[in-house]
Image (cartoon, rainbow, N blue to C red; front, side, top):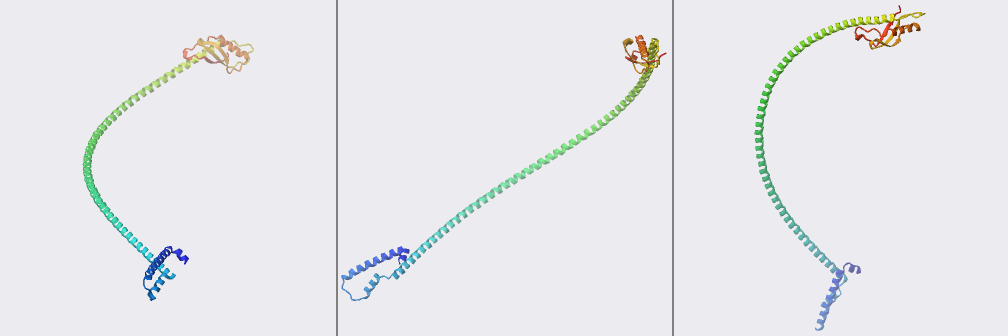
Length: 303
């Protein structure tokens, strides 16, 4: 029972309060009855005593009933709150629906207005684009006409220039051909004159060379003769073969040096030849100064 009281303290307090009330009413009723004549009937007194002495089981039943009443009340409150919440949500949903419907209507209105604006703008753009294309087409047509006209004029001028250039080219070709023919003729004549002059010069050179060769032979022969006249055969000269004498001479035939090439004779023989050359100083001069040779090669032949 203590556990029951601990689990349901409110029920305990309510039961205690109920006991107090019953006891109070009993006391009041008892006091009222003490002032009245005693009635010998047993029924009402037994009922009062039974009310005073409430069985614990009934108390628990009453507590259970109170609890059920409280639970029912709580459920009623919850149901009331649920209905209120449901009504609030319904009202809120209705409000939201109306707001959304209004927003949707406004959006539809805006959409229609935007669609009308876009359509008007599209019509305006279409008309502007059509006008632009028409103007552009007209401009292109005029530009194409101007281009064709300019191209035709250019072709005409080009053709005139081509014909003129062709005529000029032919004239220049003809002139160049005549000039080339003239130059070729002049070149042939010049070549002929050159060849003739070359041949003449060659013949003259050959003639002069022959003359120079003849004069040089006479010049060398004269030197040989001079050296031979001035040569004195040495005693016991022995073998006296031909001797190559190399003479270095200066201007006027001055003998500067005497050396020998191939000269197989004796030393006395070579000395006699050298003495003859030195004695021939100055050496005879050539008929033509061009024949003068600083280095002379003389073949000395003993008599």
